[in-house]
Amino acid sequence: MAEKSKILIIGVTEYIGKYLVEASWKARYPTYASVRESMASNPEKSGLIERFKSSGVSLIYSFFCSTSLGDIHHHESLVTAMKQVDVVISAVGPGQQSDQFKIIAAIKEAGNIKRFLPSEFGVDVDRINVVEPAASHFRIKAKLSVPRVCRLLSFQLGPNGRQSPAGDKITILVIVLKKEDIASYTIKTVDDPRTLKKILYLSPPANILTFCEIISLWERKIGSTLEKTYILEDKLLKKIHESPFPMNIILSISHSMFVKGDHAANHEIDASIGAGASELYPEVKYTTVDEYLNLCVVGGQELH
Image 1 (cartoon, rainbow, N blue to C red):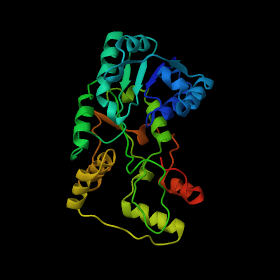
Image 2: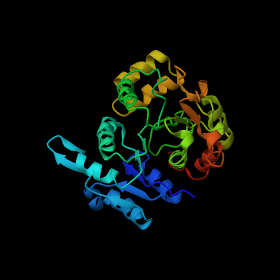
Image 3: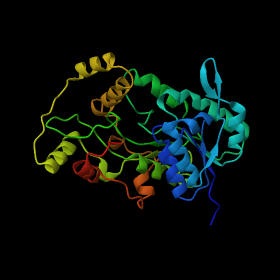
């Protein structure tokens, strides 16, 4: 059996970073996590860092240096880190997308990285028809689509946080993939030649549902009919313009997906540039929408 690649994950405390770390070490990959030195003394982060250490994850410190402009990647530290691994996965947050060009520069100088997966856990930036402010965000992401970059796409819409379907009114959400499942599919690609220079589409068949199907499913589980509020496109566009960050980003993406119809399920996958995760990895047991809603009924679980 070929030796497994050494994986460096950057952005381990961001949106999906910790799940990538966990999926990597569970799959028995030599796993390295980039950690700011200040995280070890941060009460909110120290527990996570200790959990990484106890799991056998190698921590790499001093990725950042402080300047008058804030925290930026330190090039020499990045290059040193790159030389210890084979694969780099970025999980930086939305406000750090452009920082990934610094990661790419370090990868080029190190010269030994065989695969880079940027923080592209979202919609297909080459197909999306999106309004501002998300449009500017996606233009940056599109520039990261260099030939050797493997982009992983998933669909998870709706506000983050501790909201769950409950009560007699509902904010309509679409939950297509849990973060743990996104991470599992991501790590599957690391040493798979079929995904090199490809876009991996995460569209599990059981989780391709319309709003109406999800609402009907939830109503059956709770045994009652929910009051539904509808909004016209012009009012949605006005709400996007008036909403603060990050709600304006969330709403503009929702406009693209559910008004303009920019969804992977609406497009055929071009085999020359893309692949479907469900076809490549049928052994992955993902959480279905039905199963997830069962958890919400039982315990009002936090929506991921």
